Image (cartoon, rainbow, N blue to C red; front, side):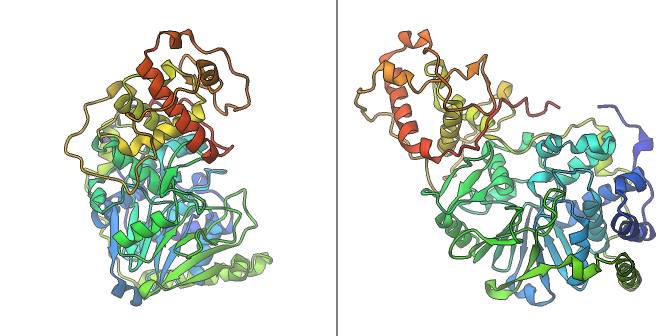
Length: 534
C-alpha cells in the first residue's frame, strides 16, 4: 500500500455539513436516484466514515446491553438486513418516526451483494448515527466483512483505496451482539462456544486476526454466518450448504437463551424471498427479520419488529407504496418535500450529542498511514480443516486415503471443538497450543474413541470405494461431484502401518454412518488463498 502524507488527513466536518449530507441523500440519492458515488465528494465521504469510527469506538462496545426497564421509554424497532435498499430505509424512518422519537437497532447487511454500488443506505445510517448517536445502533452483518466485500467486488466499485480502506476499518468497529431486555439480537446465529459471556470480552476494537484465537474467530464467524436448522439432530453442526459457519437447533438456542437470560433470538439474516418475518422454530423463539430488498428481490414484502418489556413484540409491515405514493411521481415528490421540511425542523430543534472534535491524530487516518491491510477475521471450513489436521492427527488423512473432500472437510470441522485453542495466523504460522483454555462447548463431536476396537471387515478394496481423485497437488476442485468415477488408490497405502489403517477405517465408518446424510448437495469447497492475500 502506498504511504499517505499528512494531506490525507480528515477534512473539516461540522454540524451544518452533516445536515447537508443527510438532506442531500434524501434529494439526490432517494428522489433523483443518483448514486452517492457519483455526486458525493470523496473527502466528505471519508471524513463521515472516520467520524463514525471515532463515535462507535467511544460509545458502543462489541456487546451492548439494554435493561428491560429501558424498553418502555420510547419505541424500539429492530431492523433486519437492509441490502442497500434506500427506499425501504427511508420508508421505515418516515412510517415509524425519525430519531430521536424512536430507537432503531439495525442487524447488519447494509450492502447489496448483487449491486455493491448501493452504498447510499449505509451512508445515511452513518450520518444518522452521528446526528442521533443515542438512537441508532448499527450491528455488523456478514456483508460487512473483508471476504464478502472482495467476493462481491465492493472494493472495485469504490475504486478509491483510501475510501475502501475506511469502509473496511469501519466494519471492524461495529458491535456484533446485543441484549435488549429479553431479546438476544445479532446478525445470523449462535455458537457452540457461548457457554457464558466471557468470550465477548476478547473482542477488542478494531478486530484483528493477530489478537484472536481460533475459537474467538469461530464465534465471530458463527454470529455472522450461522443459521437455524430445525431438523438438526445435534445441538450444533457445520453448515451443510456453504463452507463457513455452523447450524444450530432449537435445543441449542434454548441453552444459549437461558445463559443470557433472554426469551427470544432476533436475527437479521435469512431468506430474501420471505415476507420479511419468519419463525425458524415451532416455539417462535427464533425470529428472522428482513427489512430491505436487494436489487434481485425487488417485489418482496419487508418488515421490522417492535420490542416491548417481558419479551413481548409486534411484527410491523414496511409499506413503501403507501409511505411515498410511488405510483405517482408528483405525489411522491410532494410527500418527500413534506418529509424533508419535517426533518429540517427536527435538526434545528434537536441538540447535538456528538462533538465534532476529531483530532489531527485520527484513528482511521493513522491506521491507513501505517500501511495496514484489511484481513479475513472470520474463519472458513477450509482453514478450520487445516487447523484440525495439525492439532489432531499425527498424519495427514489424505496421505493415506483420498476421501471425498466435502465429507472430509465437514468431518474435520465437526472435530474442531475437541481441539486446544491457539492463535492461528495461516498455514505457514502455526504456533504451539495456547495453554490454560478451559472452554467446553455444549456438545462434543460424535466421534468414535480412538482406542475402540473396530472389526476389520472392510478390505482395502472396499476402502478404495470411498476414495476420490479430487486432490491434485493439494488443490480441491470446487463443486466436486460425488458421482465421479474414482481413480485407483495411491500406492502409499501399501506401506501404511496397521495402526494407521485401523484409525482410517474408524474415520471412514464415521463418515459413512454419520456425516454423509447431513451434507447438502449445495455444499461446495475450494482452496482459498492466504487470508491476507488480495
